[in-house]
Image (cartoon, rainbow, N blue to C red; front, side, top):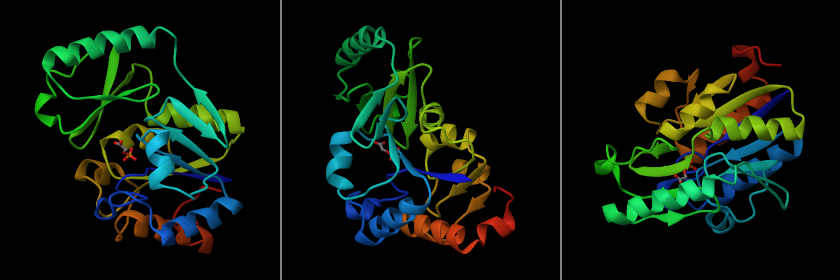
Length: 224
Ligand SMILES: O=C(O)COP(=O)(O)O
């Protein structure tokens, strides 16, 4: 038994299409998800996914980089109440720094703030990067922790195959049994992957799913 956990931006969907998922990738994932568990593990908020990935029906979602699970219409928030006080104090600091941010149901997003990385450090929160964009989130949370909570809820006990491209996928790779990087992944992600695909973005995901369905992946690895 295995489960596929896939990142969204620059993995399922490409920047070229403004991160809207292509029909080809959508159809493949929807068909695959009827046979095997397939989870999208993304930094994105639900409101963007509802538009960009309209019609995509994976087994479940891990959103906001870990703390928000979506199974069917059931939303589960993995967060302590005191986080919202902490979040408010961080927002005040961001205001003082004059940085533009947006707030999800749980986490804070900042785009294009690579130059501020040394100012974006907090004792009471974790800052996760996706290239130049930052996400500020509860300290004990990341994509890997969110996925492990989901797996418990689904009562899934098999192996995890993860696919991704960026820094925030590294904690996801850390909980996976087999790690796959798309061709457009950052070098630091490719370095720790078990398999680096020749194809970029959604084409990479399709080729991984085809390798699984044909049994070719399991000739290379013992994951069953
Ligand atoms: O950074 C984001 O908002 C989403 O990115 P991800 O799907 O690559 O995690």
